[in-house]
Image: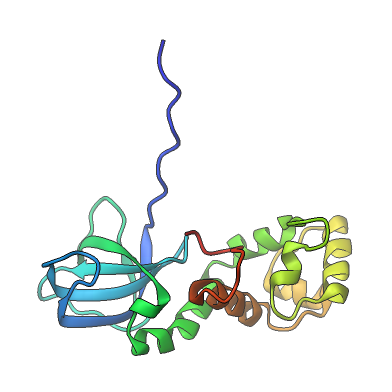
Length: 188
């Protein structure tokens, strides 16, 4: 008899650079130093401290590969960070980088909006996204019953909900900074 396999742990494949220090000291692993990068994982949207390969260069906002196989610019992912541990410049880059992630992963976020459910009998997940009040929520639920949303543009045209990227990004920032009690998008 063999044991049931536990599902493989989900690892981030990519991160976006929020800040880096060419001669930094790790704040998550004692005694590690080198090119210390503060990044945000593309999928789970967690803040990460990453150790870069010596002599590699990084740009703010750059998408870097941090997956298991064949990393080139990254030696290791040192650990997760909290919002208040990251530099103020990393904090100020957050909004732009998250908007990039939400734009680049349109399918994932549109699917989320198509499938979002009530969290409690009184609160629907959609209502927790800034700018979606009861009225937009009602229209969104009616419209997605008829036909799933295909894109941000489709959503905007059918519901009249302006700039979904900005609003979803705002929600993600609230989750990262700890403003919100429940997380829709950020995996702890």
